[in-house]
Image: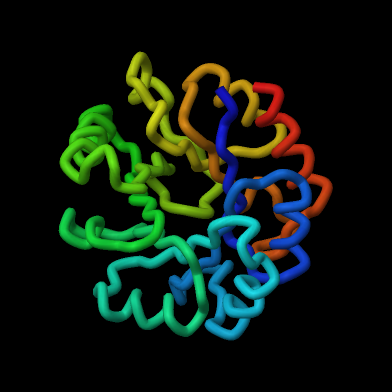
Length: 207
């Protein structure tokens, strides 16, 4: 099974294009103002224009209303929504585009609840759960893999502390639907290292 790959925290057109040229399936732009990878609306529009139909561009949101998210979608042309806050089930439904719901993994029960959430939303909905570090997106730290041991992650995305050095081993062991990285392929926050992105994606392909 081929593992889906997303490069998150993109802030520049050149990095978005390079990620896709290297084989990424999707990219993410961050609209959380406190993030060191925060992307302006105009930057996001430039990125989505450059990407076009090549891949889904996910916008990362933290505790915004449906109306506020929809406004950003209209202004930037992003083609996917990623929720990273305490949003409820209702906000995970009713979108006409792919959606990712991030879950910080502190204990096994959270992952089991996430699987239930997927089932409640429905198998036909284009929704994925992203398992992230308890310290949050972009922290560069791993969650405890023992919390997901023996669980079926074939419909989930694994993130948190992944880089070229460990992604193949993690993907081989956990067998998720996909993997996601931000800080693991950067020269500094928000600026991607083109060599690291290619190495990361090549290593995912070998998993």
